[in-house]
Length: 70
Image 1 (tube, one colour):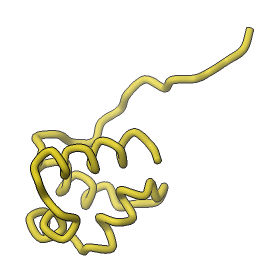
Image 2 (cartoon, rainbow, N blue to C red; image 1 turned 60 degrees about the horizontal axis):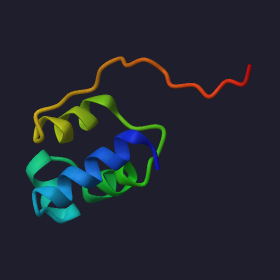
Image 3 (tube, helix red, strand yellow; image 1 turned 135 degrees about the horizontal axis):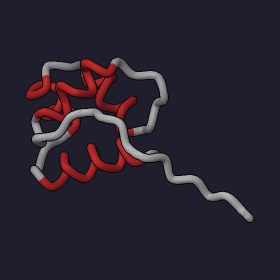
Image 4 (spheres, rainbow, N blue to C red; image 1 turned 60 degrees about the vertical axis):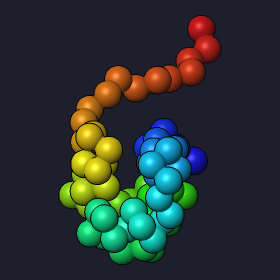
């Protein structure tokens, strides 16, 4: 699971929503929600933003966290 999928799953549960509820409220398919929460790496950004908008968020650039050994 990646950070995005963990965030969405956590928020969904915090709001007491099922995956089906979330898909309906966001206007995306149930399969999309399942793929998102399972960390699928190739998702449509516009649909991800539809889901994140329900929680007051949107996609944006962040600094990479790298584990580099010196």
